[in-house]
Length: 143
Image 1 (cartoon, helix red, strand yellow):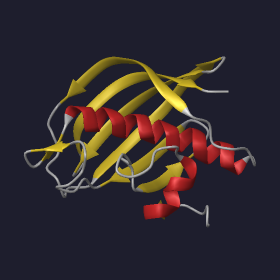
Image 2 (cartoon, helix red, strand yellow; image 1 turned 90 degrees about the vertical axis):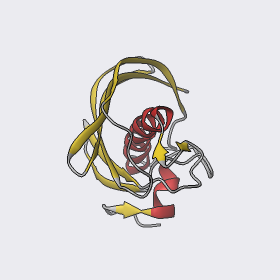
Image 3 (cartoon, helix red, strand yellow; image 1 turned 180 degrees about the vertical axis):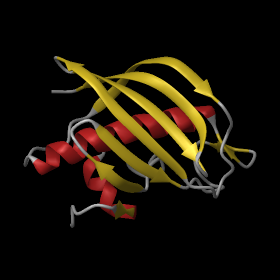
């Protein structure tokens, strides 16, 4: 599979441990040592969509999976297997609005720091340029 960015659809699955029906990213737009941008367009049958909107849980998982894309893509580019991560803490979560299904969410995470196997990220999800959700998240990476 190609690893040249941007990547869409099944091509992003090589970098994350999640599988259908619990995949909440469908595009990898950019990835650097400290930044990652993903896309996701939730459908009506998405596991974390309710009443025509992508849920709070969905937005949180989308930010976490963007963090997983970041770790996975960087690991893959170094010839390593992508690590499995677990959300350890969500801090200062603010949901500004729930995205309607069918609208593309563009999520941007910034890697703030890493201590041992714990990464801290700042995540923001946007729809049509408007901030939908934001939080800081600690992710524990399985070694």
